[in-house]
Length: 130
Image (cartoon, rainbow, N blue to C red; front, side):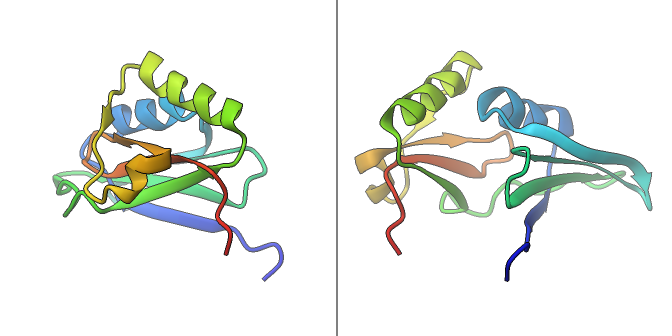
């Protein structure tokens, strides 16, 4: 599947707050966006040239629910310890405090943050060996 890109799309309760979390905290870049497309506003965020990006949408006149559980995770494996530490510091400087993971496994070598909709992001210091 060479050349395949992954888009993870989900609704948000507050586009501005979720964009701040992923841009200021995680350092994602704005990849695109739209307004009033069949009643939806949205943005795409990701890393330039990366194989994935995230899309967040707001449906006008509809309040999106919070995350259904604390186990709704995006996990980023960061093998370089200095880069991992820098990303954790960036999240904290942007005003996002770590939370304890529901699954204690993620706390052994990672730090978890919760976005404004209750979805969680784990910054894991290590590689995915599979």
